[in-house]
Length: 198
Image (cartoon, rainbow, N blue to C red; front, side, top):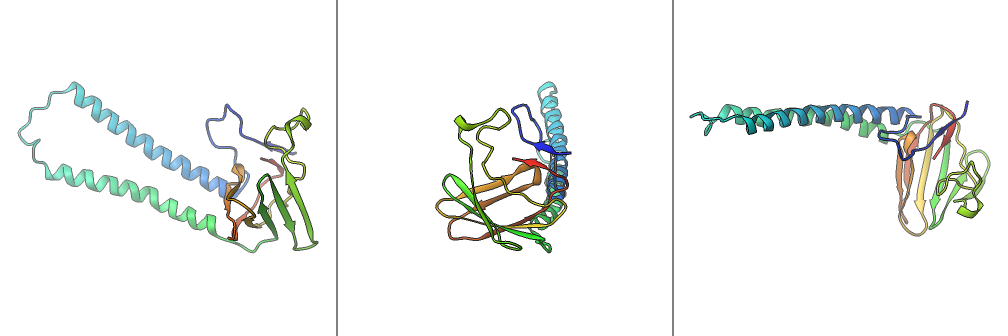
């Protein structure tokens, strides 16, 4: 079964993950969002209670215990967010033993790809002009030559640019890397399922 993965105007959340990296990113997103929701609810409840209560208490001017608490609690909250974040950074940067390497060069209006591991295959990938689109094509997303990768295999992409800075991304795979002129960046990813990813 072939899946089509594309973001549409009605999507409020992340795309469905098609790689282990994106699953980790989705879990971290949900974890951080839950922490932020809890903080927002607590702070909102405190602000609402301030509006509707009249506090007249002689110890409100000096409270070292409450100052210690509201210094330690945000610190613990930041640690609670930072530890999974650091783990995720190392997972995203890890380059395992790749099965295939794809060399990618960003140009002003197209991408150049090169498979040089098995056979020397080179091709350019141009965006399909609006007046040549078929009914099943997506405007500003479909190209004339797509790259093909094996699923459930580790892929290494070496990426650079010929003229200006470009960004090569596939959101459902959790891949986003900048192509910078004069610099060779690399990224590693794999796909859990077959599909057509934009």
